[in-house]
Image (cartoon, rainbow, N blue to C red; front, side, top):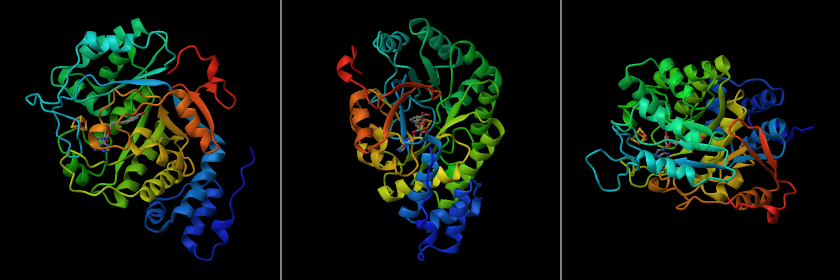
Length: 388
Ligand code: V47
Ligand code: SF4
C-alpha cells in the first residue's frame, strides 16, 4: 500500500518549526527523542497529532482493525496491596463485595466456552495471599486439559512478583514453571507509571518499576511475549508519561517481546483518588496519537473499549489505534467498578465488526499473537453456527 504523507502539517504556518521537524522525522521513519515526545504533549494539537499517528498506523496496518475473541477470568478481588486508584480490590477481612472463586468454579467458566470459537483466556485479579505459584500452575494445566487450543494470557508482573517471592523462586524459575504448565503470555497490567516518585504516591507497596521491567524481560527471554500498559490522567505529568514510554521503548529494543502498548485512562469512581478529575476525550486521543508516534518499535496500539466506551474507541482508530481488544463477556469487573463508560462490557462479534465498519475500517479477528483468524470485510453472519 502506498500511504501518502499529509503535507498539511508541514505547510501550515500556525505549526511551529519544532513540530514541523518532528513531522519530517515521522515521515522519514526516524525515531523521536524524549524532548520531542514532551514537546508533542505540550504543544501538539489534536489535528496535527492525528495526522502523524494515522500516517504511522496506516503504513503499518493499512485499514485493518484487530480484535480477538476472548474471555476473562478474575479468580479473586482480594488483594494484599493498596493501590490508590483501584476500585476493585478488597482486603481479606472485607467480606462485602469480595469474591474468591474456587478451582471448580474457574474450570466451569472455561467449560462454558465449550464449542465456542474463543482463542484466548485472560486471567488476572487481585493478589491473594493464599493463591500461590503452584496453585496457579496447576490451574493453568487443568484449563489446558479442558481447552488445549486456548492461549492463556495470565498474571500481571505484580501478581507474578508476589507469587515468585512467596514461593522463594527467581522470576526465571517461576515463569518457567508457569510456562511448562501451559501459560503462553503475560498481560500488560501493573505498569501504571514507572516514575518512582509517582509510584510511591499511587501504588507504594506493589512491585517496583525495575521489578516490572525485569519480569517482562525475563518472560521475553523465555519466549513468552507480553503487553505493556500505562495508567495516565491522574497525578502524573507529561514528562512521566514520556519517561514511562521511554523505558518500555528501551526494553523493546533489547527483547522485541512486547506485542501491544495499551494506554489506560484513569477512572475516578470508588477509589482513593476519586477527588481527581478525569481527563477529557481530547486528551485521550492526543495520548493515543503520541503513543503511536513515540513507541516506534511496538507493532500495535490498543484501545481497551470497555474502559473508554464505543464512541471514543471508534474515534481512536483515527489517532493511531489499530487494536480494540476482544469480545469480552461481562466477567471483567476491574473497570465497571472504577466507573468506565461500559457498565456491561459485552459485544458480540457482529456488533464489534459493525462498530469498526461504521468508521470505514476493516475488521480483522486475530489470535493473541496477531495471526489473522478471519477477515470480516465481506463476512456473512447468518452462516455462523455459534453466536459470540
Ligand atoms: O494495572 C486499575 C488498571 C490494570 C483503574 O494486556 C485502572 O491485553 C483506570 O492491565 N482506572 C489491569 N485503570 C488491566 C490491564 C489490561 C486490561 C486489558 C487488556 C490488557 C492486556 C491488560 O487496570 C491495572 C491498572 O493500571 N486500573 N484501576 C482505574 N481506576
Ligand atoms: Fe491489587 Fe491490582 Fe488493585 Fe493494585 S491494582 S490493589 S495490585 S488488584
